[in-house]
Length: 270
Length: 278
Image 1: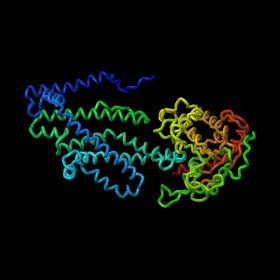
Image 2: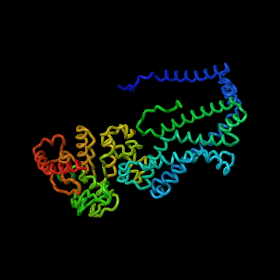
Image 3: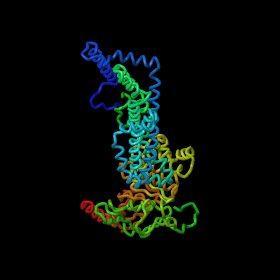
Image 4: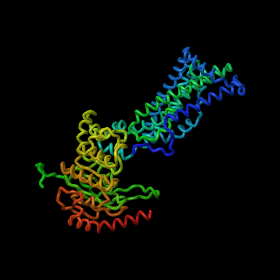
């Protein structure tokens, strides 16, 4: 009775994990064979052993930690600033229909702009340090959070709202006990996307011009035709993304425990 | 069956609805006006249980929203304990037809919410909410969230949530219509128990005539909309305490039912014809 329904009778989780690791090993094996037999040139494609060795060295010698720290810092700052700004403006627009009506086309226009083109501007304004990357990340995160908060405030159930008012809620109470929790639910459901975009902003910004960070490392390696360095940078970036995504999943589960459990098919597997 | 408290006779009824008309801009035609209820008069005494029955779309909820202060009438006024109502009715508790619990709050926090809104510190509000949860039989479910409770349990939480702030007038909009028959009768008896322990004025909306007769002191009949009016008023002289399941078989109940239904049936048919037209 308590057994979870399995529509297509999938094998258990350990088997899936095993199969997943086969895919990974198979990929590296294929890469290794193709480059070792020179079917694919090691100059253009690197070799998996060299990539792993380089990555290991970077971690062991500690060079990579500084760059990871910079990228993480930029990501977190972009995420925090973008989220706070998104919440504030989302609330404001949702509660002030005139403001929302007037600014609507401009918000849409800015959101339609590919944000990468802003990177050179930010670099001119804010220099090559972390803030130009943070700014780029903020422009990405802001709109996700903004639209979600706007929606969250707009879609508060009128019955729940009327009920709270009948129970004696002041407008401050409504904000704290009704609007904010509803909006935050929408924000958290877009947490994965927001964090991901914060990171895109950071790495792309670094790639286009900087003196530190994972994007900078990849760009440097590319500049000297160091394919192994490029792939190693990508590997580190991937690991970084998986770790961050897992952390976000944990936070999400803790903060949204009041929500009905949906099928969690996406998650820490990355 | 005299009330023990030696209160002086109230100079005003708990609630008086005087010539209330509610019109809305029509959603179908531009510029057209849809009148939900027209020129409705009635009063509800202190401690009286009044039901309003009427066909679907007769503006029952509209009347309740006027009493709650959620909706300002186009004409007429609602008078609460002798005072004109402006804004939210501070004496009223409202149990909605749809789920109205805050989904992000546990059952206990939902019950405690009304106290918190009145400035009671959170810890104390939660302490005072506990016995209320127990009274509706949910003392073991305080930490559950609404989605983890059954429909009947959510209604109980809503009932405790409404009653904890001690409203003098309780408004109920088909609160049990979504429940199955058995749960519904249990809830009706529980409601009567809670009500008779501490008589408050109740305005109960339902389309179920049996429910209305079983619970009420008085049943008001609303005509089919648009422009629904009150067309009938029946005193339910069945002794209390009542068991809603048992009294349905008594001759007096059946007499009253026949009498009210003969009037209500025509309105239901009219209402049905209207919905078919749309």
